[in-house]
Amino acid sequence: MRIAIFGPPGAGKGTQARLIAARFGIPHIGTGDMLRAAVRSGSELGKTVKDVMESGRLVSDELIGEVVASRLAEADAAAGFLLDGFPRTARQVEILDEALAELGVDLDRVVVLEVPEEVVLARMVGRSQLGDEGRFRADDREDVIRERLRVHQEQTAPVAAIYGTRGLVTVVDGSGSIEAVFERISESLQEIAR
Ligand code: AMP
Image (cartoon, rainbow, N blue to C red; front, side):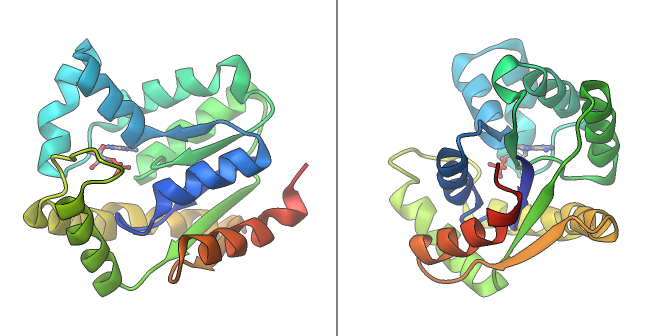
């Protein structure tokens, strides 16, 4: 099962992605998580992306494209994967197409989580005060949250439209409890589960 999950920042995408990956036994490839780990480790990649991430803007397509392409080529992704946070721009869609073509596989489905903007803002401001799973995120300040939502609208929402024209999109209502959303997503993926 090769899937990608889309949704605005604060839609609960990361949480759902981890649950879905565990249920279907596929690796969770979260680009935000990978980049945050790189920043924490102080690697060259981390140093390159730190400032851009903290501003709420996107790191370059070519850079993140390389990170994802090499991750997809790892053995544990051969039988399937869940992409979370990638692709986020039209150029990243092309980069992903090329990487998948090289591996001789295709995306099976793109899950789009839909959550009203006021809900997203309220959840994210709450997360920045409480800390997400105890971890502080430098990009969770309210001004940065607004910037991330703006970037999402401008660059990422059109990416879902590209997959829509390919007939790959399933829209899932992302409101309600974590469990309720998880059930909706799992159900929408039943037919392609193998
Ligand atoms: P996320 O946790 O997915 O919201 O990602 C956090 C930050 O990492 C984003 O605001 C970007 O700065 C960077 N990032 C993650 N994924 C990508 C991507 N596919 N393209 C560009 N930047 C990304």
